[in-house]
Image (cartoon, rainbow, N blue to C red; front, side):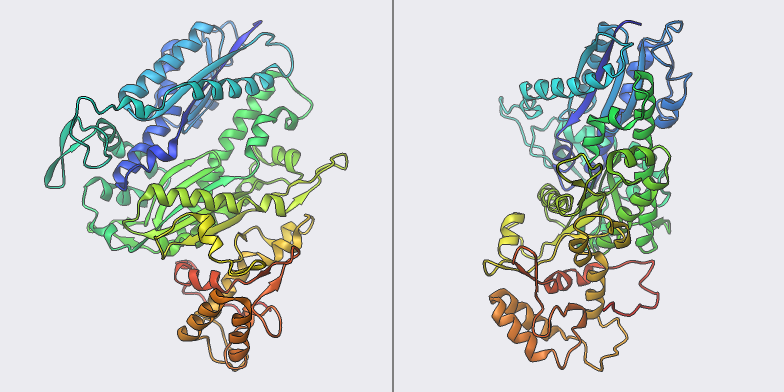
Length: 574
């Protein structure tokens, strides 16, 4: 085979599409449509071209690994002109022998999106690989196809332009888009848009798929499908958790650098597919492990449920809506388990070692904890800004992979940033954090927090920074405020009134806070917060005075973990 065509099909604006309403049924259905765009629809289109009946309800990972169902494009004795490299939620890579077949696949999938998922932005592009037999030709094509995709996406009009309001029509009661039909929701008939219709129709399929992850999700999501959310109404706080892997873009764009001496296209495909599928498996395994944080609950039918709705679980991405009181511990366990899973998976370990010098991957997360009826789209935007803040850890904890490098690269280190939104008057993270800087060189927050085990970071530059930002310190400080410790200092626990007095003083200036601390330190147990004899603040390398007192005070009621809440509490670390 002299040449081939590399095809990329990908969805855009997924978060806006999923979180455009506060209806969890629609959020779940939108997530399912995004998933099907990169998996089921791809398999169906390829099945038609390859004249192969593909059971798209079967495990996608099983199909991709099956050489009978997904044969190598190199084998010209088989009349199978298409090979799927990867197919995951919202994204797929394929190879075709003919340009017409590449066009046919893109046409099939995008037409399906227009009909089955109006409002979902799906684009497809392809590039020609002129010399298929040349080592590295596929790797170069991957870079080219991403550039081609960005150009094509920038020239296309937004999907919102499909929903014009002339002639004037009724508005959808859920999305605000032009209504197309009346549908019974609960006991009422309401006008809804075709976008809402398509999302609601796929919620059942999402329940079936997610049940394979954990049986308890079936009852939880089934409850949403009934349009009876009375059980969910009892949760006064919800959290949107968004987690994303660190440095995965670097790995995928420069993948040929990490696959060893064999730079052939076939080895590239096999390693790329193996790594991509392993990422899915590790993310799902970490998610399952983290579910144990939640308490055992039952619905009206006495089915065990878990108070979480996964919206995106694929590759290195995780987005969930869950009970806000357990969100911090859920995320911590997920990130720690993600590191463990990737270190133990042979599909990832060697690639990670070549890329980062450490045989594991890491991830960061942003957590926005909001009141039940707060707009999901705004909460997600806050979570997205929080994950950007958490990813600052990549600049703080670094290393040199080789001695030849002039600058350091990020060291695999997972971190969390969070915010509990008590005040909804301003939800811009920059403004929120500015209010926590009463003076030029004073900062009343210590976030983000590192959840990677501190002993794993001893070889990294920035170890000292990570040590002072480790999650266990926050945990110990919260336990102190909750009086969960055995009191060896013969001091009283900090009362709520004294906590409030300290908060008020902190928001004035450092001098007031130090005075308030000195006034009570002999009577109350503040050992975990103690940074010096006379202050709750410590001085950072850049000359900023920081304190973690408000972090612990804000998170105190949102640090629940059903696995450990009933266990005996360890002593506070000194």
